[in-house]
Length: 287
Image (cartoon, rainbow, N blue to C red; front, side):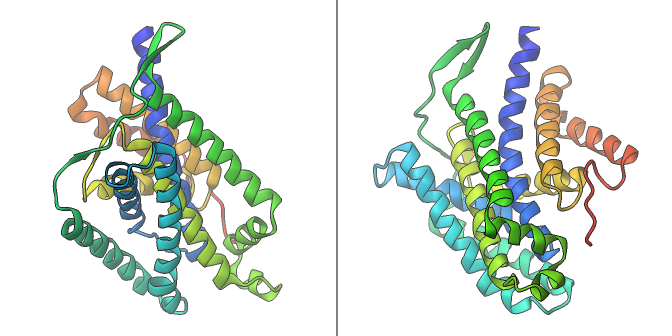
């Protein structure tokens, strides 16, 4: 039983990271209706910003994490303005190709600037604490609690602010939102900034647990796409539930099946979910 609970905590840690990345991807898809393949590489850049803020400039972990979020928020805004805004009236295939191009550019840039070596982020909160007989590192607790707080904050922002309401209205009907006076171009820019901020914070939370390297964004973006498909394209509750399902299933698969097949086990479970609900757990149609 202790082993099960231990792996459940590990799964919630993974799921929390997946949720933050998938939420940003969901927000962007809701506004642009195009999968942003570069989103995982924004996650990767966020990890490097956090890493070098701590090692080169001596900032503490929390300041480095906040700085990474701010820097990547700006990068996200610039990406929307430079890459996607000029294509706002173009066919979806053009935006699709642009997203792939941005992804390849960011990974190549990372390799040029920082090399291809695997790096370790300083582990500040590496002490093990005992909770109900379960041994958990402080960093994993920080990941789970921080992710939940960020998701609650995002929900409040979307439900209780004018900008948040504009984002939801634009995601539901872009043309209709424009007709009632919402500046959909500004909404798209803000959404990219928020999504990139979430990706950077997810990377800062995950960095002390996992390694940092230029291609780290490729695997997480693949998983994020699976999550939003399973959760229902454009659904925020679906992205959260899908993220935790994937994280917990991976952790359990690694323990009770094999670490070599943990991804296969997780994806099989998600395929079974889609077989039962082909439109996803919380499908949301455009109105």
